[in-house]
Amino acid sequence: MNDLINKIDKISIFFIVYTILFLTFFNTLDYTLPFVLAFLCALLLRKPTIFISKKLKIKSGIASLITTLVFFTIIITLLVLGITTISQEAIQLGKNTQAYISKNSTDIYNSFYKLQKYYNDLDPYIINTLEKNFTNFVTKTSNIVVGFSGKLVSYIINLIATIPYILMVVLFTLLTTYFFTKDMSSSKINMQNLIPNNKTDKLLKIYSETKKMLGNYLLSYMIIILFTFLETIIVFLIFKVKYAVILSVICAIADLLPILGIGAIYIPIAFIYLIVFKNYVTFIGLLICYILVSIIRQIIEPKIVSSSLGIHPVAVLAALFIGLKSNGISGMIFCIFLVVFFNIFRKLDMF
Image 1 (tube, one colour):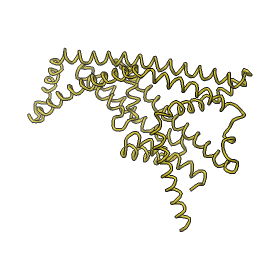
Image 2 (cartoon, helix red, strand yellow):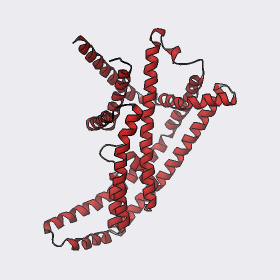
Image 3 (cartoon, helix red, strand yellow):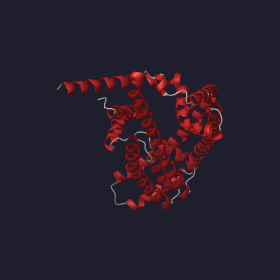
Image 4 (cartoon, helix red, strand yellow):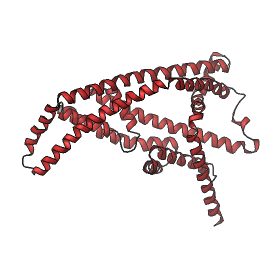
């Protein structure tokens, strides 16, 4: 009985401490963002820096400078190219959608009336309901596309307006990454120097397991996003869907968001090709590919996440569902990391 009470006490303390740390971390992220990013970048660059230092027989400081500059050059180049491509496609998409719907609204409604001939046997009330719903669908689709592209362009403009702040964050992140990478790749500095001797083993194990599991968690979701993006862009290129890049990026992001999912992109596009362009092949192809991509996503996510974290797939699914249901994305992050850290402490026999 005492053992059970002690176990419950430890779990309760763990949950309280974890919640406080989680809230503190995210509430202070505006002030600590450069240093958090720098620490994560330094973890990625540690091994390449050590490899270059040994291979070229140069000091860790010079090797850290090389890896940091190369890494940030690649990241900034990719971001600039990505933002440029997405903003151009977003502006063009908004303009073309609005222009097409305003010029061809009569043809769109005529297509609906022609489709109505096949349903003459239906009750007039049902036909009227379908007509109203179709009108609302066209209007809402137009508003959503134009509104989204407008918001995206507005966001990019606001992003440009905050360039001084972004440059400051990038500069501090770059400099801090260099120093973190230099320290981490130096044999003189390691975790044992930072932890009291009587607690070194246990804290080192916690640090090692945390780093490993968090790294695997981030890597697993990067793989999922990459899978969704590649699958979508291949599908859109095969069926010659315009604005394939921006739509694929939106699909990859929507795939991680609650409620939305890739259906928010695939289904409207499929019906646009059916109703507006009368392209039945693309319509059927997009719907089939949507089903296939959704099935693949449902299969690979629990397996990738659970295998990378060493957690049962049901625990991952429960964390995702409860988190999304309780507080959206932030709730999902809270529950996932709760499961991760609970698993770490359980592995170390601390419960």
